[in-house]
Image 1 (cartoon, rainbow, N blue to C red):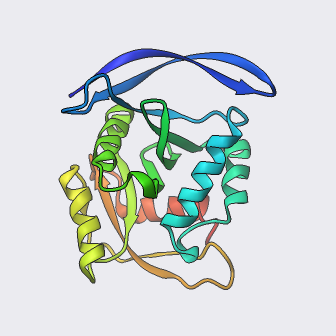
Image 2: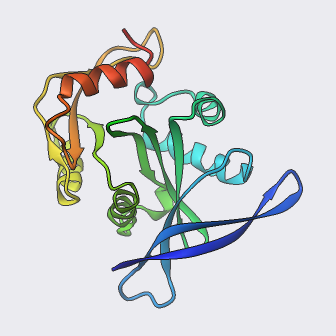
Image 3: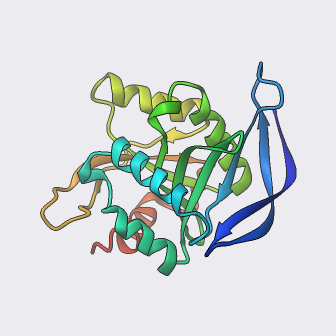
Length: 212
């Protein structure tokens, strides 16, 4: 179950503690009294240690051809207003992250990962559910086609969380000039058929990958 609560936290920034208040979705994990999972937006410069933990998870969870150099992630957080980093926290400890793009008609999840130490603990599904409740909008993400046990399992995970798999032909553009185009598939949550997948593809190509 989940409920909306107001949270106030102190964040160390430039050797000063800053009080930040925000509303988040709080999830009480069955069988764990007084334990909660929250999903909250990272503010640039607010906690460098958290960024280092995100970098470790990011590099561990995704092969090189499926991710940016992390310095580019940090740059986007500062320079690109559509780009966001969501932190997944459990009992005030870092568990994982979501990076996402806020477009006018939809949200695109670029990367979503649970830290290796916390995988297989049910955090992924619960964090994704909270994230979707916060957004209340159409969400798009990329998955590898169902070619083996791992890719089939990943698609099943998203289907259990309300996503629809599309057979629309799609390839992920390269993050680096020497990288190949990668066959991928779209999955959507709350799909609005007034927005065709070709338009979504071109929006992602233009803004996320800077590809034309």
